[in-house]
Image (cartoon, rainbow, N blue to C red; front, top):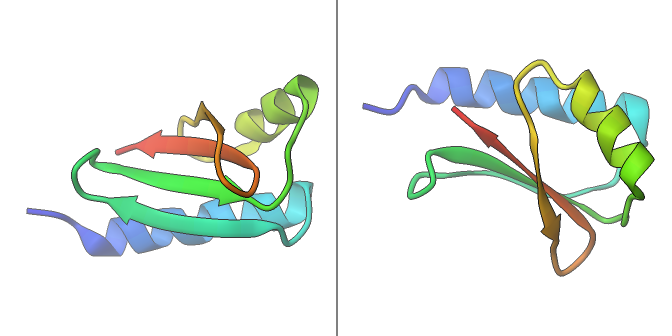
Length: 78
């Protein structure tokens, strides 16, 4: 059974970190049940240093997921 309250809380924490570190640039932030993960795509393309810096700020483990249609993608496995 999926705990949506935890997912929503985690998404809020992710949104807060992104807004504080790189500004309001979230293109997509959604839970993907098939992956059992939260996916984040930004409207910006970040360089390696910015990716490392942002990943270190998240309250949950984040993995770089490549470049999406709009910008840099991250995945958070729950």
